[in-house]
Every structure is written in C-alpha cells, then in structure tokens.
Image (cartoon, rainbow, N blue to C red; front, side):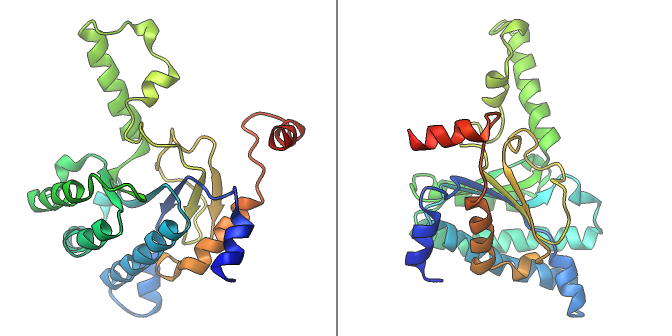
Length: 253
C-alpha cells in the first residue's frame, strides 16, 4: 500500500500517542538458536523502523516499554548486557534522533541504573530537548504502580507542607504528578509477542486506550505490522462512555 493511500485511509484516525510493549526478543533469538542478547539487538532495529514510521505519519508521542521494574528478576548477566546495549544505543542513536527533530525522554525510577547509563540518558535528553517533532518516550525501570505511588507521595508531601488540603486531591491533580502529565494519554496500545496483558505499564494512562495484541515477535514488528495495527485502530469507534449514536452525531456536527 502506498503512503498516499495510507494517508487517505488513516485521515483523522492517526493516534496522537502510541504505547508499545516490545515483547518477544528472547523467543525470537531462541527460535534461531541464538543467545537472548541477539534478540535484544535485533529489537533495536525494530525500534528504528517504528520511530521512523511514526515520524512519517505525524504521530505526536511514541512510548516504548524498554525495561520494567520487574525485569531486575532476570539473570544478572542478561540485565548487565541490557544495560550495555542501552548505553550503546543512546550513544549511537541520539545524534540521529536529533537530526530528525525527535525529542527523547526517559521515564522511570532511574536511580537504580549505573552512573554511566544515567549520564548517557542526561546527554541524550539535553541534546534533543528543544526538538519539536515526534516525542519518543522510553520507559526504563518503570512500573505503572510505581508511577501512581510516586505521584501520591508527591501529593502527600504537598499536604504535609500545607500547600494543599486532602480534599483538594482529585483525578486531575493526581494526573498532574504522573510521569507523562504533559502528554496526551495513549490512544493505541500495542503488545507484541502473543501475550494479552498490560504488565504494569502505564496503568493510569491506558484507561481508555484501544488495546491491540499481536503474535508477531518484536524483532519482526516492522512498518507493515504497525500499519496493520493502525488500520485496526481506524475501524474502532471510541465512545468514552457515550453511545455509538452520540459519537456519530458528534462526528457529523
């Protein structure tokens, strides 16, 4: 399908924000009798392709779940290799992101990461901070429960300091203290690898997202697979509590 045809088909239906759990790197490697790290390296290539495609389609935000707070339970050698791969990817890709006007942000509890990795994150974020194109968010040592907890802790400190009262706490105020407070909530959530759960990812923010699950392993998830997800999304009627008839009346008004 040509890009022109795609643009017509998706007109008015491109998600502002896509969130992805990139699952299946290890299984991809195992099926090829390769070490797991080979799957993670191949997964970086898929990240490049999806970032490029989102930029072409004028998606505003792409959030990728790179390393969950539960992933520390993996073998220490694999965790160490993932840290090194993350460092090298930042060193290699930040300049390309900057050239393409992509703004990078890393969210999560970063204090547990090695100092070298935190330094590379700081440098990449600083380099791309003023870019106005796609906002690429990498969730690393992130968990949705952690995100909500740290927001409530921040509110508790404000109550203790007398800045606000307990009665002031609302959904809106909690939202303002979450990691992605300044971004639209995800319209489309994608999980590769065949699992059908959200695994502690953006628990608050995914409340009204469309959930798309595919058996494709992440290293095989390319622009055509993303386009298939976008075609599925374009057929969804997003009601947000309204009836279908109400939605159609709003669209035709």
